[in-house]
Length: 297
Image (cartoon, rainbow, N blue to C red):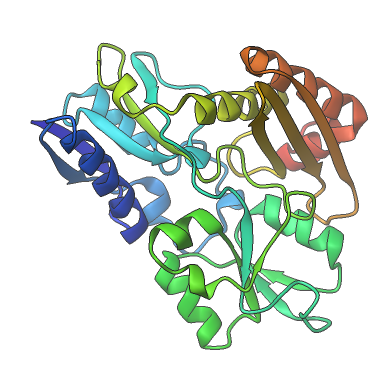
């Protein structure tokens, strides 16, 4: 029996149970082991201010390396681009809707000075670029907690990932789906990642090749920018007729500068496309944005 490592939130457990159901169709028995991560323990600070990479993955990876679990299920957007020695991304299942959404109001429907909740520097920067009048405040907690804060009137709207709401059957709460040009999503958003030790053989059972190619380009771009999960960088890749199209953004936290670039090429060149677009963003001003975020001397 394989042991699946999972965070304990309702969304994380949904994701892990989905993976378990897919493995069950292959005749593979599993059980889920809940592991609390650093990101789960820090609930009163915006993630962008914590500074550490792997906030939602490190403890799961430690359990993998120790042999406590056989595979870990992550939201791919939480994963650093560099994995610990001995571990690999065994599979990327088919992606859910990668877009961000507003819950509580549409972007144009928000009054001047309205309060919008998000703890993502990427979302905050792009919100401020479109609506500099908004008051953007941090919001943490699982989906139910954040949705309740809107209902209680603590925020006029919050920004969430469409994928999580859809997976939990909460898509009716979506007020507006934000286009990729308005709110470029996090690298890997909407995709799951199955991480295993390098000797695992389960990868091909769950892998979706088009999704893997798309997120490979996105992660190559993020690696080329030297960014982590909590920096103001967004990217979205899609595949059409064997051509990969990659859109990416780097934005200053106050929204005053937004650099948007796109590239395309053969799916087989996913890594090269991502790396080249990263260089273009850096040359166009992303280097100064990232230096300011990281506090470079």
